[in-house]
Figure 1 (spheres, helix red, strand yellow):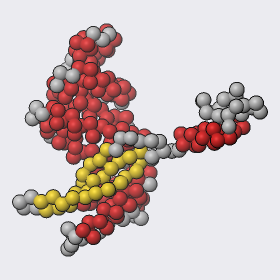
Figure 2 (tube, one colour):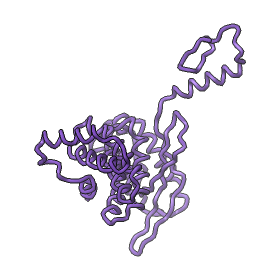
Figure 3 (cartoon, one colour):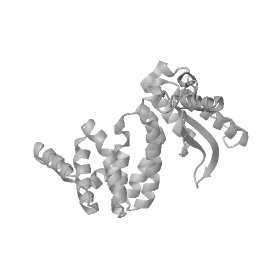
Figure 4 (tube, one colour):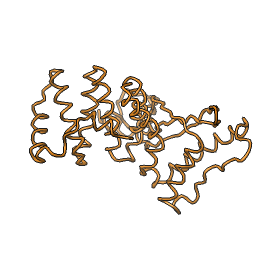
Length: 282
């Protein structure tokens, strides 16, 4: 039997004596079209809540980030205030100006900020705003987009690492990583390096060598490709140490690390991965 699109048959590929029914062909063809859909991001703001402190009161919006074009079972979300949207918008305008002149941020309210009707209206308006922003190519490829969705959680995660609260840090950083992975089609592969490095450090301190090795190993290819030498040496050192612990073959990693240190005479790469991570987001 003839094949097309891998293992998926189209109507024209079916010979006259095929046992496939028309219904099965239609299902097959729908699968082809579904797999060919371009991937893009969807932003949904399903809820909001009012936060009250002794000297302040504000609304935070839950922003869910999902991929379209294929089934995305990982619904990951962050919470952002209107002031976060405002700061994000100003940064984009400073960099892209006229390219975003038709994308308007919902106006700031002078009164009635905590009215249920106003919160509901703003929630929907901010959701529409994110959709329009993402339609702009310059925004999709901007580092500001990734920073808006991940920087707060990254800062919290690294603060927790400095405080020795590695389990809580993993929870924050896992959210960051999942969002970054959704953004990767439009961002540099180095986007995930800092997060994977931090996760590797956390898992090592939590005595989870398999996870530590896996995180560091995932971070290494973009580090090599883009010449992040400080991270490269530190990642290799962790991989060699943890690899020995796990009984993995690490001779090539050890050779790469030795060559890197010899080439630079050992001067630039004295920090461990943990030291590098601790100094991020200070």
